Every structure is written in structure tokens, then in C-alpha cells.
Image 1 (cartoon, rainbow, N blue to C red):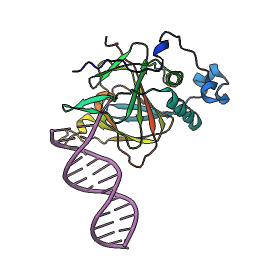
Image 2: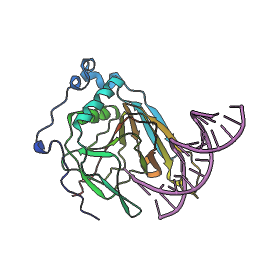
Image 3: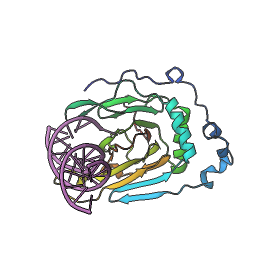
Image 4: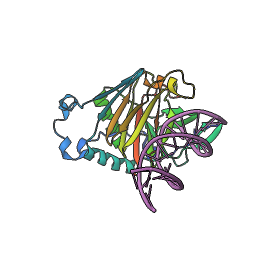
Length: 250
DNA sequence: AGTCGCCCACCCGC
DNA sequence: CGCGGGTGGGCGAC
């Protein structure tokens, strides 16, 4: 195992002690969102779609309007700094660079290790805070970390579970999608492979621009998920998965 | 959180 | 309209 915790370039390394400024809604969205700020929590409940199967429990909703999602996408294009050195991953003994841009943001000092690679969280940016708080507002869950995947063109993500030890197993993972619409597939762990013990239908979703997918416990115990190749999709997608990390891994 | 190769389904041009 | 080559993508091996 390599010592991977090297300096990662974070945009605000210089001001790590600066308390976060609250971002006013109009700075993100324009004026139409600024009214009735204190009523927001309950005045406009978003319509959730329940997605269930055996051991799978997800909630899906459109969190942002197209207009707002467009704006957030643009903001993130400017704000988010992706790790310069390609993240590496080890699969069946071989080391590969992952073919997409990744970034990790979160509370100060947080380290999230996946596939054997510890990644230090950069300081929250205003837009990431705004999205995080929007998710908290509609879910009631708080998050201290976000993994950002930038999928250009026909990038994809292989089938996996988010089963890292430092993830709070009872906290949902909130996946926000911006940009290109992509298919998303769940497969039950017992229905994979040549001689799978059971026949359970995969669950297929379409993740829209501005959507939020909540993956609740115990989904990640029983179900793998992937973002399959879609060669006809040429535009990029930014995916933000908000998580709750239990320990700093110091 | 990887690629590669096989195989099948679908598409399109002739 | 049927056929065949090209392509996409689902899986499994590693």
C-alpha cells in the first residue's frame, strides 16, 4: 500500500480558518428565490418518488429547476478544482488511473479512503455549501463530505458499492446530478455473476439535470450501482455524492 | 469506482 | 423489405 496522502491542491488552502460566509439565495439563483426565506422549509415540499426493492430503499426528486441547475453547473465549473494527479485505483492487482475528474470537499481535516486511496477534503466552496444545505433542507440529513465526479463524454463508473468503513452506515448518501442526463443501474449482490444464487431484476433509473437521489440504508449493503457507458451522450455531467464520514482516519 | 473481449441486439444503408 | 456489416453495451474474466 502506498502513502497517498500528499498535498492535494485545494482552491482555498490559504484561508482554511476563514469562517464560511453564508451565501444568499439571490447570489446563486437570482431574485425569484429570495422571498419567504423563513417559510422555505415547508412551503414548497418537493414531490418524492420512492424506489424500492428487496433491501433497496431510495428516494428520487427534482431538487433544482432547470434554470437553477444550469446556474449551479456553471458555478461549479468555475469553483471546483479537480485533483491534478489522476486518482489511481487498484482492481484485481492492477493499478489504473480513473478516466474522469474527481474532487473531494468537506469539513476541515476530513479524509475519506476509497479503493485504498486516502483523499483529503478541500474546504467547502459557496456553491457546494448551497447545494449541501439544499439537500439538508429537503432530507433532514446533514453531510460533512462530498465526492465530486466529472464525467465527460462517454465516461462511466463501474459497478460498485459504497461500503467504506468510515461511512456512517445509517446515513443516506445523497447524489446530486447536474448536466447531462444519464442512466443509473442498481444490481442486487446475489443476482450478479454467472451462477448467481438468485434472480432479482436490476433497478434502472434516469438521473435528470438538477435531480437528487437519496440512497438510504441498507441499499449499499445489498445493491451495487453503476453509471453505464452511453456513447451517444456527449455533454458532461457533474455528480456530487454527499456523505457522512464518521472518523477522520488520522 | 479498472480494462478487455465475447456475444448479442439493434440500426442503418443498400 | 431482408440482409449484413457496424456499433453499442451487458457481462464475465482478470
